[in-house]
Image (tube, rainbow, N blue to C red; front, side, top):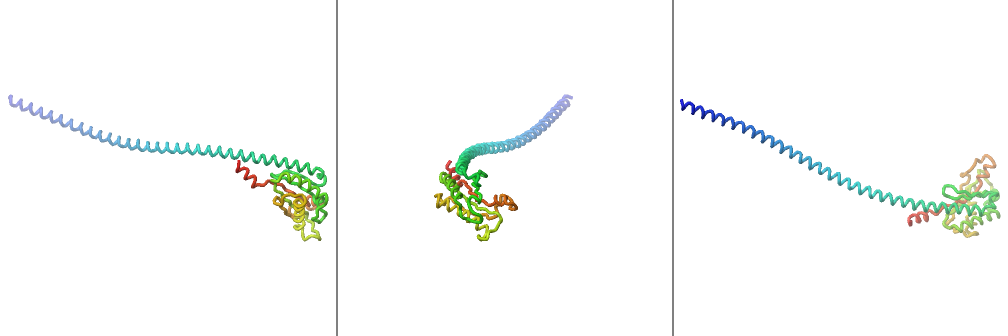
Amino acid sequence: MLQKLALASIITLLCVASLSSCVSSKKYKTAVAQSDSLRTANTDLTTKVNSQQKELDAAKANADKAAKDLAAYRQDCEAAKQKLQETQAVMQKQYDNFKEVQKVISDAEENFKQKGVEVIYKDGMIYVDMDDKLLYKTGSASLSKNGKKALSNLASALNDYPELRVIVLGSTDDKEYKNVTDNWSLSTERANGVVRVLNKTYKVNPERLIAAGKSKYNPEAENTTEAGKAKNRRTEIILNPNLEKLYDSVQKN
């Protein structure tokens, strides 16, 4: 009887030991699986962190570059602003000089305003318009005494402002004259006559002078009336700045 009890006890202990061993093995496998999962998750997380760090470093580098570009842009803007202010100052000085020249010429030609001389400022240039009745006889390119006197007053002002370029432009109405080749010749020769007098008689530097003729193709009014024809028969003396000197002045500043 005692032997049977001992044998039963031994069997019971072996069963308990076997059951215990079985339970520990399952927990171990579960723990190993969890550990592997955590290790994989950690690896993935590390990869993501490294990737995000690279993106952050790239974003920082871009931000630094953008900051440098912005600083350079602001510097360029300041330089451009200063250049613009300098250019505006030069242009304002040029405008003030032109208005001064306009007044000087207008005062010089005061006695001829009723005889067909008009001095105006337009589009950055000064126009001295002279009717043909003041300068020439009908169909002629020979200057009259009054015309030469009016040019004398103008030449005095021109010689006081040697930086100005002078364009003399002749224009006619649509009437054809028998004693001249055509109106192209008449308008051009009238401009040439003014240039010759300004240079040879009144010593205006010839390098400043340009002569041109527009014939009947530069009308200010219709050629259908005598009043319109009279407006179209004129000589314009156009004063404009020496753009090369103006550019040099801007560059020096």
